[in-house]
Amino acid sequence: MKKVLLLCCGLWLGATVFAQSAPAIALIPEPVSITTGTGRFVLPQNLVIGADKNSALAHTASMLQQKLSAPTGYTVTVSASEGNPAIRLQLLQNKDAQLGKEGYKLSVTNNGVTVAANEPAGVFYGVQSLLQLLPKDIESKEKVTGATWDMPVVEVTDYPRFGWRGLMFDVSRHFFTKEDVKQYIDQMVRYKYNLLHLHLTDDEGWRIEIKSLPKLTEVGAWNAKKVGYFGTFSKPEPNEPRNYGGFYTQEDLKELVRYAQDRFVNILPEVDVPGHSLAAIAAYPELACSAGKGPKPEVSSGQSIKDWSKHVALIDDNLCPANEAVYTFLDKVVGEMAQIFPFEYIHMGGDETFKTFWKDDPAIKALMQREKLKTMEEVQSYFTRRVEKIVASKGKKLMGWDEILEGGIAPSAAVMSWRGMKGGIEAAKMKHEVVMSPTDFAYIDYMQGDVLVEPRIYATLRLNKAYQFDPLPEGVDPKYIKGGQANLWTEQVYNMRHAQYMTWPRGFAIAEAVWSPKAKRNWDAFMPRVEAHMKRFDVADVKYAPSVFDPIVAVSRTADGKLKIDLTTEVKDLSIHYTFDNSFPDHHYPKVEGSLIIPKDAVMLKVVTYRGKEQKGRVINMPLSELEKRVKKV
Image: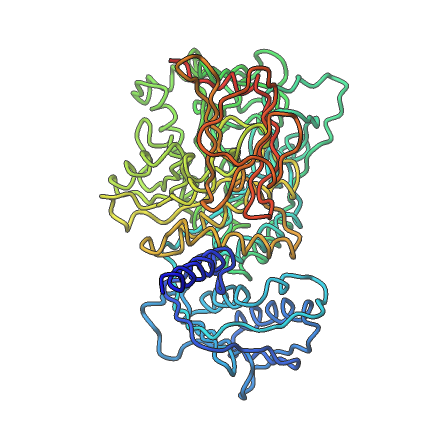
C-alpha cells in the first residue's frame, strides 16, 4: 500500500510539473474569472464569424478573419445576418455594469464561441483571449499542416483593473518608421494595452512635422549615426554626414492615429520641454537662454552633453522660460499637435531640466524678480503654468513627468511618475490625476539579466521585479490613479528586433499589472503562461528575451578570502550546471548545489540552466576577473 501511495504521489507531482510547464489554458493577462468545462470546440473548415451590425465590430471581425484564415487554410467568412455562426461577436442588449466599457464575456461550448460585451472595445479584447485559447500555430502567417484547430470549453468573465494601460515608445533617440510603430501596436493590443505614448522629441531628434516651423524637421530630425554605448560617443566631426534619422509627416501621424483607434488604442504624443530640447534649439537657436553665446548648437548624436554626477549641463538643451518667443513657438507646436491627435492629453515632458544655463542669465534674473520667483524650480513651474495655458487653449490637458511637481504644480496638470512612486503619491494626494511608470518596475530599457550577456546599460530590471508592479499604492485614493505603463527608452535600441527583445516578456508582466485583479497575481502561475506565449512568439517570429532563465549571480568572499559565487534562478524548477575548465556545460555537467568556491588557478566560470534535459538559459561566460570586481566592499 505504501508503494502504491508513493507511486500515486509521484504521478501527481509529475502531472503538476507538467501542468506548470504547459498549462492547458494560458491567458495573458490573467482574466477576472475563468471556468473550464469538458470537451473542446473544433473550428469547422467553412468557418463563419457572425458580427452584430456595428462598424467597429465589423473591423474586429475582419481582423479575426485574417488571423484565422492564414494558418488554418480554412474558408473564413464574416456575416452580419442571423444564423448559427461558429464564432459570434455581439453587443449586449442589456448592459452588464460589471463589464464596463472594456470588459467582455467569452463562452466556448462544444458547438461554438460567443464573445459578448457592452462596447466594441470589450469585444475586441475578448477576441484577443479567444485567439490565445487556440493552439500556438494560430500565430503563423502561413498555412500550417497537421494542426488541430480547437479550443477548450470555457467561460471567461473579464474586465480591466485600470483604464490606462500603456507602453511608451521612444522614437526620438532612434527613428522608427510608421510601419514599425504599427507593428508595435499590433503586438501590444494582443495583451490588452490601450495607450501608446510616443516620445516624439529629444536632444537626438525631432520627429513630428510642424508645418509652421519647417526647420524642426529639416534640421532637428537628423544627426550622425553612432554605434557603441550611448553617452560615450565621440562628437561628430564637421564633415561627418548628418543623415541619420527621420520624421513623421502629419499625414503619417493621422494614419497611425486611425490605425491605433481601429485597435482601441489612444496615442499620447510627447514633446519634451523645457529640457531635452537640443533638436529644437539646433533648428531655432534663439529659443535657448544661451543664444548667440558659443558655437552653433547641433542635434546630439549621442555624445555626452551632461555631467550626471554633478547635475550640470555641458551644452544648453533647455528652452528659455524668460523668452516670449518660446511661448509663441510652443503655441504653434501644440496647436498643430492638437489637430493631429484626438486624445485628451498632450505630454509636455518636464524631466531632467539641468538649469546650468539659466542660473546666470540676465533675462532669467529679470523674470524671477518680476514674477517673485525664488528658485530655479519655481522658474520651471512658471514655464509649466504658461505651457499648461497653451495646452488648455487647444482643448487639451497637460501631462508631465513628476519633476513638474517641483516649485509648484500647474493647476490641472496630470503627473506621470517615473522616479519611483513617490511623485505619483504626492500628486494624487494633491488631487491630480496620476499615471505610474516607475523606474524600479516599469523601465523596460533596463537590462533584463546579467551584464555579461545583456546589452549594457546602467541598471537592471528582471521579469520577476516587473511582475511586482502595482500602480495603486496603499493609502492613495484610487480615483486619482489612472493606471500604469512601461517605458521603452531607445538610446541603446536601434531596431525593431531589439525593441521586441526589450519589451517582451516584461510587457506581459506590466499588462497583467494594469489589467488583472490584484488578488489573482501569482508569479508561479504566471511563468508557465509566459513560457506558453514565448512559444507563440516563436511561431509569430517575434523576438523576446530569454533572460528570465539565466541565473542571478552574487559574489562575495569566504572568511579566508576566497571568491565565493552564489547562483539562483527566477524560475524555480531549473537546474544550474557549471564548469571551471573552459568547456561548455550542459545537463551532464555538475549541478550547482550551494555556493561555488573558485579553484585556485581557474580563470573562467561557465554556467547554463536546464529543465530536465531541455536547455532553458544561455551559456554565460563569466571571467573570474570580472566577478572579482563585483565583490562588495565591506
